Amino acid sequence: MERKTKVHAEDGKQELLITREFDLPLDLLFRAHVDPEIVEQWMGTRVLKLEGRKHGAWHFETTDPKGNKHVFSGTIHDFIPNEKITRTFEMENTPFGAQLEFLEFEKLTEDASKLNMHIIYRSVALRDQMVEMGMTWGINMAHNSLQKVAEKLKAK
Image 1 (cartoon, rainbow, N blue to C red):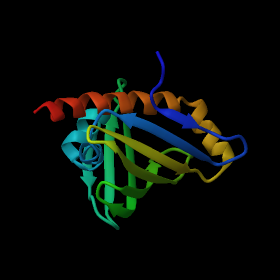
Image 2 (image 1 turned 180 degrees about the vertical axis):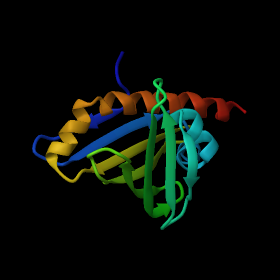
Image 3 (image 1 turned 90 degrees about the horizontal axis):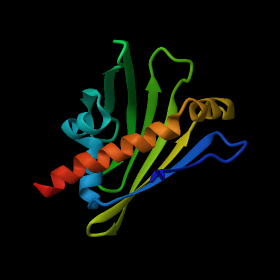
Image 4 (image 1 turned 120 degrees about the vertical axis):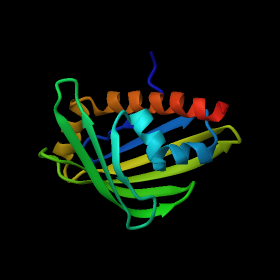
């Protein structure tokens, strides 16, 4: 099955460029990233905090099938509704450290939109390690889930 989320990892660079087109209106795609109830559905995680504003914070927690808790958090540095979110992302108890993420939302038609993500890691080695761990597969699966969850909301 073709992956709809495209991940570009240029050799020698510490960044990823990720794009995905969704069959969703722009406002619904954006809302799926900032509404805690929707985020919990498509990410399969608990949202402990999600402040959709400049200088806001976010904090998610998930439990894997073995019962291990994984905590993710960061700070929102820029927030323009239906346009962009600039944030940090960090996983607790891992050697990866914080990464910087630029999410840009683009209207394609009334019923279609595009997400452009630019993720910057501290080093090329860390970026490569994330890719090797299956991050590209995981983000594609998450985006597939986002599409399904948001389609149900669109139908209401």
